Image (cartoon, rainbow, N blue to C red; front, top):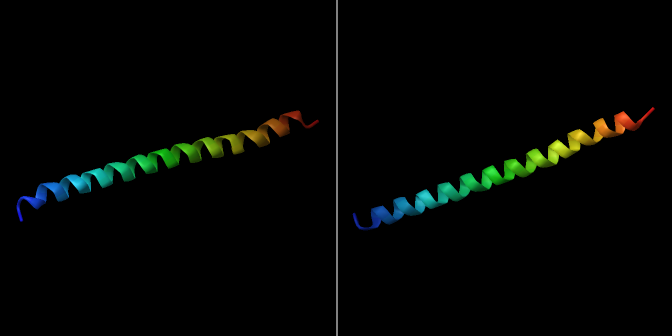
Length: 49
């Protein structure tokens, strides 16, 4: 059983890293999306008389 423990630990580490990268990528996309969405009203407000 001890031979399988390192593999399980390594696999768990890979899953955690992939999950963290996915969350970071998703948050970056959300920041860009909301950043553009928040900038649009300012542009329209500036153009409106």
